[in-house]
Length: 82
Picture 1 (tube, rainbow, N blue to C red):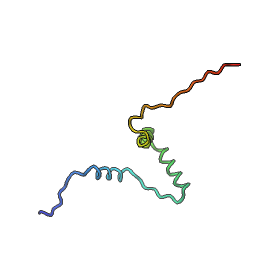
Picture 2: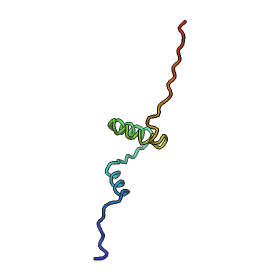
Picture 3: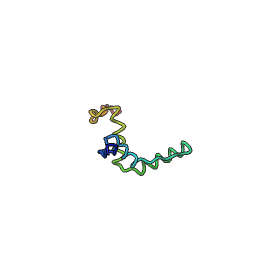
């Protein structure tokens, strides 16, 4: 019985891999136009929360978690009426 496999809890990597396999769908496109149509259909079907989560996932590597409150400078110029 020493060779029997020991059942252990999955590691974090294994759990993430299993979750991705269950959630992800692989679509094969025959052209770039078809791939673009599939991408657009995917994002149209996504909920607003899913879209925002994806946007945040893309934003974080560029600006970091601390730059959430950063804004563009506002500029106001008063022009006299003639």
